[in-house]
Length: 239
Image (cartoon, rainbow, N blue to C red):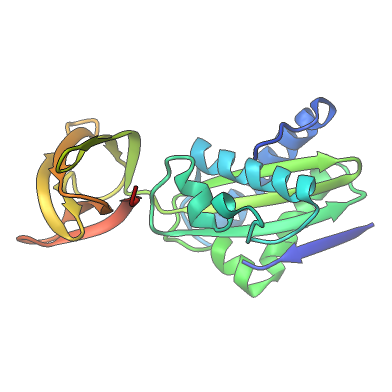
């Protein structure tokens, strides 16, 4: 029996392992929030986009026989790329990994969270009060389980995104939900304001703008006159 700890996809999990994978992921989520509660920190909310990114990474590590944060596949090579592929565009994120062998469902979850708490860097991620979202992905192959835990701070969730080319740039339409912070701000392109937005009582808003070309699109929350705090952004690539 052994465990492997690492600092901080495209294939389906085997049918026989699905129940065990879900059970381990749920137990890790529960134990992680228990550890945060003991430290006087607010609980993390399970985020389906973070969970999908975590599941894909765990499955890919098993499928391609490697263990680490950097994927050999270019489109998944960094955590940021993996999150963006799930339409998760928060700028603040982190990742914990663990691999265990020879233990049952509950024991594997307990060993994983304890290993993270015993590691200063992993503990810092797990007990970081800044994060408010988490996703857990588990891949089980035989008696080995590979676990990814992705953290994020979500201020504005992008629910739907449309970027349509135009003769002189792009038309951007975003449907969003404010999950933390002020409920009005601006859509920025390369740091320049192109549209204002204001959320309704539920925190939802739609904003659209014509931007002149490729570059970084940001959602800023108002922080004084003509100043914005940005926690959510994505890139429009060159064609």
